[in-house]
Length: 351
Image 1 (spheres, rainbow, N blue to C red):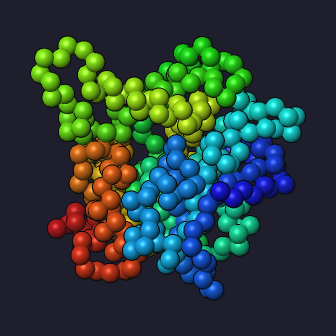
Image 2 (cartoon, one colour):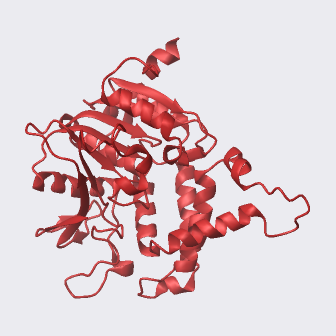
Image 3 (cartoon, rainbow, N blue to C red):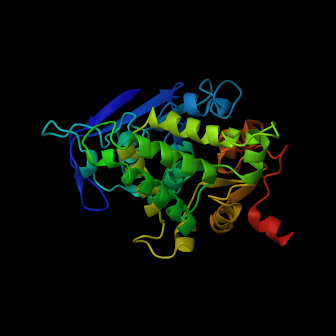
């Protein structure tokens, strides 16, 4: 991971300031002479800037994120704990932010990434791709600078975070707030609450069918310690061991704040300003970001195509169904018309 420190005050939407902003990022491949091969990836909630790690199924030779073909950039979002300024970062008074980290939004995340793009002297981006919170960032960046992108891919995301999404996130934060250790100034504060929050989140990320396929017990006489229960504990502890409660609270609140219309007017009008050739991808069983939200995007973004991944694994389908996803992305990136048809959703609706 590389890091760049910006020696200017960074003003957030809330009016709070981050001094000495640091943005962590990874690059893969080689930038060509005319800068026509840049793919910028925006990561989801608890991921990091190493896209070759968390999206390995889409990364590599012959795959959509091919470092032999493209110059791939992925930056860590502010508020995270993986290289960019976040709640555990040390302030100028030599103490960490902890509970005093500013409220940040997806728009703030994008503005930090715009600073990075300027520092890297990247003016034009061939394609920007993101899923979930990453997709929200892709939408924000296209709203801020529609002329910068040749192509844009929005996966399992929305133009405004939904009430049910906000309810899921608040319920997770309640688990953290109810951990008495969260009031302390320690990197391990709220760790037990974070594990519970992640377990709650997993239910929203998956589906009835997905749990039935992978977590149903085969022993008919069991009375306790079911496979699904063990899975929840495992997933909760797994995140708690690699993340921190302060960043989880910060980033989930940023997701809740996502609204393309804030300060701009009607969301439909904002989407109509997008210039990039766009692809919108939904996951059929996603209940957190249901396909109806992606269909709304496809209806109102000019030059947008709509595709749906068929999966039993809910929102996490974009992290699981790589054969389908890679076929869709490879076709889109190469502008091919064969294979899976890239029918616009408007045409699909009228068929």
